[in-house]
Length: 538
Ligand code: AMP
Image (tube, rainbow, N blue to C red; front, top):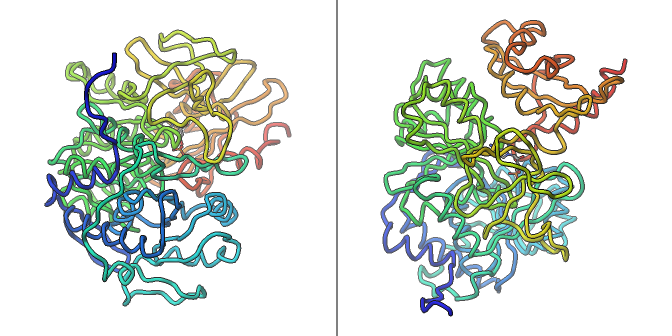
């Protein structure tokens, strides 16, 4: 027997209309490319999203047309989030840090019709425009006064584009499974693959990922998402902020420690969200300048593992809880969060930090299991590790334009290797391609990296497995020094010696000025692995 309730479709335009009626006066603050702070409300933002949608209709944009953006976290990018998807067109966020060949491939593969770009990224588009087969026009996200000169003819100015349009629109209604946005994964091998989100997956994800025991967004939240809006819809935050009336503070192009710190102080930000590298910079800046982040209650860290030293620094220097999360592009992205629990009240801090280094428990909306290579389910006792498989309404079923399912018996293989304990806490051991196989046993490169950054002279660490005559593979440790304390090979190995198993100790420590990062800020290990593949065979 079916239930008797309404089959109301979950649409992004519905989130916008809810926000206009209920959270109209919530502020949105942006640090701008043109200079200075821009400040307006959800009501103002929604009006401009509607003007934009009307302007797109004048260009004959239809349901299913794909419109690209290459932009920082800022109010105009936010207007595109709602204006494009509201029409049933697809918001395709492009990562400006990708290599030109990847950008060409992605734009052509997606068949983007227009590209909305921030002025500083225009040279990237100029460089590839002659190879973009489907793009009809480029809109620069600025006003007339700040329009850059360009080799591209007929550039459109965003403010002119929307200026004369009506602030009213009747949003089209369509099936909630209609595509709403598109993001390509920056895989290290092969061509990037597109993840095509739907209105339903986007609304459901924003809803569950930011609920009470998860990201916990409320109308009292003042959040600063450094996580880019060009990657996985900034973890769903723009939609969720409109649902709950949480104030957003956008850093614009300025994500260095000093700029972020100033914005936190001036806007009294209480929640931060971003990948670990950004916070390293912020922590260094506050340390050097003796600043305490008084207003901040929690920092959501995901995208890479949060090292214990970072968890400790936020807690002990800033009285701020590090909320460790895990997820991926294919999962919209959130899968797990390590939320504060009542049990933590009675724990000593070291015990709590240890728990916080785990990626946490599944949010409602994500089921998890670990399996061996044969697909057999492994026990959840916190020790056995296996391939981490997930399932849920905001998790990919197939890649964009692929005819094959991406699933194995209905589950998606995350490519991560993990343990799950009896309470549901999941711990990432490694990416399956990064785990080091030494003499048939596995060494976690992530564990070694996280332990190494606890050394007072280490800013960043990276571990890769390289060929070894006897053990097949052995770990090499790469270090970037922070200049705060003496740091050499012996002191690093000595520091690690009582913290990891003896046979895990890296065979060599190599000091570099910087480590290679991919387009989403993650360590890029492929190059290092290749450059040093014979290092231990000499
Ligand atoms: P992406 O799709 O580019 O966001 O990358 C997703 C991958 O990042 C995951 O499959 C993990 O390997 C890694 N990742 C994300 N969050 C964490 C975390 N908290 N700890 C360790 N690895 C993480």
